[in-house]
Image (cartoon, rainbow, N blue to C red; front, top):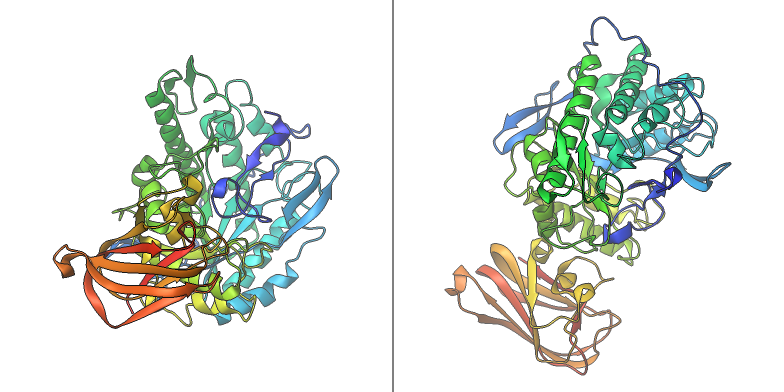
Length: 577
């Protein structure tokens, strides 16, 4: 792997690679970087700052929760990923995507005041921003070529924190890589690239951890020196989206032993040792960096971001980026976990929760730090608003405690103000103070479900594609009728309404579809719910609402008995009323 080819799993532009749903990877700068001295460490104060952060953690009735120390009220993070993303011409890397919010040469901090006012009017309270998303020698970045961090850049960060406090927001600072300049990247690169390469260097080597430690402490010290309102910071995030690179050293090696920063040796011929190295590497890395943060800012919260791991529900099968979460969820010292999951791709919410290993987890809060509606999957602001509100509501079932939409201004994902502002209104805390109940009165129960079918054309057209919330995907039986698809809602519900969504590839003309239900309310036996005998038109929904809901239903079966072509449905939706 060339050092300039390292990928980071964030930023905006287009839909995420490997059907993750979210922003696409963008090239990092050279790992080696320009010649520079090792990252300096700003002189530390003899006593840590005593500023108390506004948001802390406590044990609530449902486990750990955020709360506001000034009011004593529970705090529910709801807001946006916020950056002013722009393309710039780099003298060394072509055209690159960078964040303009804090940039000292062509920054867009002036826009932040108006944006935050609009968000605050809707009742949102949390922002997630990149403190360093600038590379390729484009200028105006956080790292100072002479060493350390740019004073002017830090001034802009502090100005933003004052704006956030003014509008009653708290901020999560995240990152994907240390700054190119300032000596941090140069320190990190000492651990690369024979035994460890790419992101593996960050987590598994002493040089990688030391570079990150120097960077985060210099950043915090820079805020302290400027009397920044640290109470406006919700958390420092160690990594936007953490992953190991299984195609790079040491994981590309099938033999030999490796010693990592924690002093442990691992046998690369042992699959158990390889996984243990990943798990223990992240545990050690996060512990070290959390300690470094608390040395300067002792009441700070610390988190780390992750996209979904490869199983148990198969996803991202050709993606070498590897995520192993169970021990991080249950053993790490992180104050909360930031998870990224988007509707309209490969997995529904229940499958995401299974892959995140969070079902039943109450040990720490869980934040859905990225979720959004790709315009390739949702053709209108109306459909995107419905999908996002339902996705948010479905996540409550699995212990999610906060939500940050992707994003305020991404061109490829629906924004909160697009159309007639339907998305912002559908997610606004002002309109729906309780996202798990008020906003879910019309929730599609199938979004948190599992599906099975009589037949399937293949993985790209699996049964789950008919309940993923996206009209851009579909289940295909690969044959004509009779064919059935059954939705397992996971628990008993009242069922009052169903919607069938044919798409542009669905068979048209006369079809007969019988819908039956079963569960505790039917004594475990199938009973008829409704039979459609209709002329199907592409992209025209078919709907039935019962005079009164049927109680105690867990399974809903849709059986196409007559159709002029293969049985294909883009979405099958189930509602309580």
